[in-house]
Length: 290
Image (cartoon, rainbow, N blue to C red):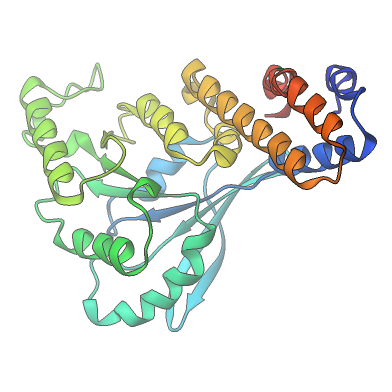
């Protein structure tokens, strides 16, 4: 990690033990490898959606077993930084498999920063998705804020022949039907984050999805995901959100070190005084780190 001269000058008045611990934790933060879960029935377009959003295509790595059930793991790596996706089974299968899935989810959920749940916009029934979602939230204890619901394949909503292929957007009648679908998702799942309606094939509203994705991620994961986004979708809003998250994480690092390092009270007070400067320098260097 580049220990920029701005950092060195800002931290120069502080004890060596603080500087060492700070840079170690900062390096860990910069190299954090996010992991995102993917849920949704076969045919919902999970892979095509992820491949459209990010710079590189999904690369299969391994299967993750839980009893006899498996989740498939995919990686994206750019400049030695890795983003992992885990395609979770469970949607559209029998409830009799719950016991097998429970062990798999219990093993996997703690490592997932977020689950992207992909629904087909033209699907008439989401009962199996609802059952699986309730299982994850009610029995496995996964919080609703850790899910981002995406209505994909918006171009297939009826009347599908009205899709504006030149402007890559729905007709007025399709737009009304898509809004009704969004409301149906809200009613069925009561999501914490806004429902995103997109078409990977038509690049419809992928910019909005990328921006919402960064906002939905935990603070420590957003910069690592933003780094991997296709440049088209790495907007100023995406970078601002990720930079602010990074600044919050750096602030938390300083607070933790103040609480845990065996330093004199006066030194801890001095660190608290310069914390805002440390955070400001870190945010100014975000583009170098990511």
